[in-house]
Length: 184
Image (cartoon, rainbow, N blue to C red; front, side):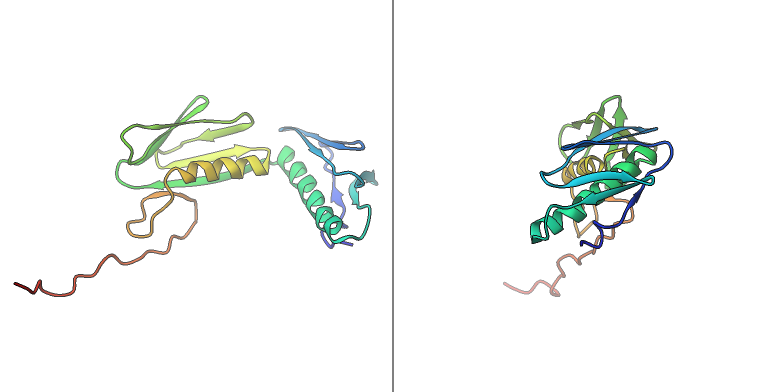
């Protein structure tokens, strides 16, 4: 069996898991998430733990076995604790402002970029250079963070751009002057 797939998932007391043939629903204090289960896989509850079973020992089924278990575990963590990603903005005049369901980014373009915040995600800007993305769906939180970072990825020469909090950007030296201008 898959090492990850065979590990049981503890279900906290305040979480309700409803497995059916093709859909598993997880409901907790922060919200509700659903996951479609591929044909042949079984999800069952035994002794307060969630177990995932696979249909065969094919390589593809072994890979999906661990994936389904990890996705279910992430759902349980999401509905109890939630997920968060932090972004840092660096550069002269670069800033962010969250207003309702719109994140307004002022980067080096002539106009601000208005990013529509998806359903299930909250974005906070405690400082104009910090963006905090929160939600219960780990995949969606990571995707939103990557989309926002994609507007101006950090460049290695001056370090301007949007980066993940704690991310190290390897800096490069600029062009070196080759001595005095010789010539004509």
